[in-house]
Image (cartoon, rainbow, N blue to C red; front, side, top):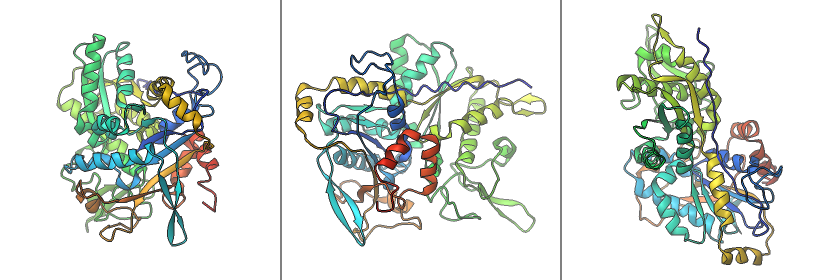
Length: 466
């Protein structure tokens, strides 16, 4: 057997630094869900710059030492990737700008006290890092216009493309874009890759995209795509299945998928003869398997001439699954049918996985150092103490029309049935707690994101009184 050496050259790229001004003013980090914490983790763990001079050279001090962060997850409105397929991108932009208003102004957040809410002040962010690929793809120009020229805004797509092209200059192949359906529909990555490739003198760039329908949602345990306690197929499920016309599980590829079957990871409905007549995915690992096989099947079908050797993880949730992605690519590289390798014409032995976080941080570092003198003085004039805060958008139950599902979040029909221009506050911005984020998710943070988890803990999120 040929040994697969799957090169995970995680080009997560990132930074901001400790400056002598404005550290009591937070840096805003925004994502549609908790996936953007992978970007915050890159910021907190980075040492790529000299903190005094700004020169790109490590100095043994974390580049964000002394900085504080306001993180916002628009969980109630996620997944963003489905708004495009439902023809609701204008509504999506409207909700994104509401989130920008929350981060970029001295406003308030809500905190539940018994049966009501009290409101507490929060500070304006001094810059915003848009960790969400879909938000960057659809709304980055609008975000920059909305917050004004004095507030730096950094998005993730340019950073990921830059890292992918750096690898392409070392080893040519096909660049894969593995992102949400919405990000893929925006064509943001291919357009940026082609623009940057042209500027770098790279010709005939080969690109393939795969929308990971349901993957980010399953990682965030969205009821429509994953339900921890269920043991049989259910009508509310929206992910790939035997009956989903757009995202159909191909029974001819069942062995190729290699689905995980432990506990309730894969749900089947059987007829009287024991045949599975319906199948639903109920584990992020199985979503990864479904979409990577779908990607390679498309490349075989469309006869790509350059094998996949670079894969951009174009959603902040996907780095949580990087080990699984690496392992599944290894399996598929070695998968044989009647002694023939099924995917070796379209899959390289070495695949460079690109996580844009570090490059994003580097751009943010540079932008922060270039803040206007007026803004620096404004920061110095503030007397408040800096504190980390972690906010999440939840359904605003004061609106009588709101429809929620058993897990307390919007139903799929209601979420994507809303229209722009209503002026309604569909969500409240509240702190993270153990009710709006599952304990399993915090356990994942603890394992995968130790720096962010430490900040979350110190912010009092997991304390009984919070």
